[in-house]
Amino acid sequence: MNVYVKLNGGGAVDTVYGGPQPQDSSVVEIADSDARYVAWLAAGTVQAAYAAAIQAGLAITSSGSPAISGTYGIATTDLLAMTAMQLAVEAGKPLPAAYWDSKGNHGAFTAPQVTNIADAIFNYEALLVAWVSGGGVGTQPAASATIA
Image 1: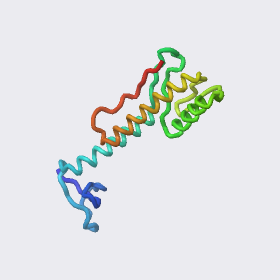
Image 2: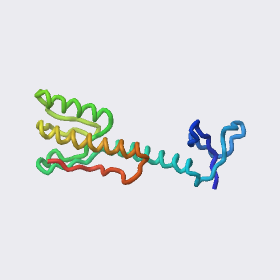
Image 3: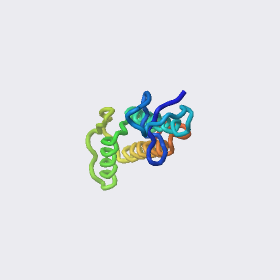
Image 4: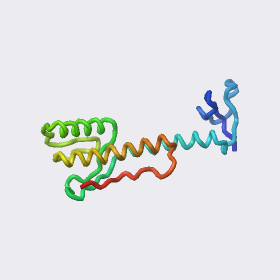
């Protein structure tokens, strides 16, 4: 089967069309097995998987404090909030009475708990970004972590 695509300056697929585009001579027909088209599909699949992972969050299980086990948000606002919490810990400032993120209210934490949760969240986010940057090669990082 063939597909109709517009290639970018580097020769990679930039846009895919449902049929010929007679008004645009830059649209070409290539086989759906063409490496450029396959790479374009993979990139879209990886981006969709990344978006779904961000939406789902990270399931954290605490072996030492089961009450803090739960699914934690990893959207940008969640990362910023967790960064602020970790900075407060490092500065010796009091922690808020509760921590809210896109997945809900997680109650209050001790300083070591904040550090463990932040570490798990940031490690997972780094693994996700590396996986996406690598084109989704290998297994998508697991959306779960165990902390003390």
